[in-house]
Amino acid sequence: MFYDGFFDNLEGMTLVKDPSPDLFMDYVPDIKAFKAVGFKGGETYLATGKIKRTKPCYVPWFQALAREVPAEEVKHIKMTMAAPEWYHLRHSGKFAYSHDVYKNDSEYFADIAQAYREEIDALYEAGCRNIQIDDPLLAYFCAESMIEGLKEVGDDPEKLLDSYIQLYNDCLATKKPDFSVGLHLCRGNFKDGVHFSEGGYDAIAVKLFNELNADFYYLEYDTPRAGGFEPLKELPKNKQVVLGLISSKVPKLEDKQEVIARIHEAAKYLDDPKLTRIAISPQCGFASHIEGNLVTEDDVEKKLKLVSEIATEVFGTTVW
Image (spheres, rainbow, N blue to C red):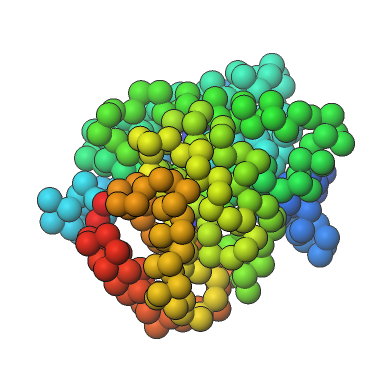
């Protein structure tokens, strides 16, 4: 799963196999949706001790991939990582950690950030130069339902978002200049195209693009639920955006010329007529949940070929 591989390898994190539904916050859109159909929630991890990175998390996976490609291609390997606030938003500061271990969110976040820095430094030493953090949770801050839900329980959505952005920046504080960090946002990629939230990036664009120290933003843009391209006006000149224009949810193949037209539409808001800060990709993974989506291997191959064809035609290359 996209959120596996990190927290489950940290000392201090404990697997809870049959968690009480009360541990999960109803204002989180996917939790609300699952509870509505009687799903009690799967396994989760809670911090019952002091969080420490005592062994590699993603490094062995990177090394395995590196052995499969020519040496000159290793720099193009992209490792995906879990979002640092994953369990905090789902459980809140009330349940995410033992209050015998951490007095507050700041202490909890500090140890998470330290573990991330150590893992990122280790990936760099192993030859990795490119990571993508998969974070559907930040997109939930675009959903009015979660904003209202947070307010109902007495939490300030803006302050919570600020704390998560600071957590990200603390996680990335020691990254080297030639180490690229991408951030992927989507609103759910569940079976049959089920999604958990809606809302454009307008509500978070200024902070997301200007305050969070990522280099690339991989943004869902394959359906109207993600809104328009207007928020891209806030993207700084030294950052890039990857438009998720090819759907991973449905088998229907996108129209090539329509996708190209959307690229040029987005470029207008970026003030980037030469297309130097823009790229395309599938919206999400083709099987980011165990249930997968109703796309066959042939469908996946056709969509990936379409991405390659468009990139070559529009940008002159398939590699940034």
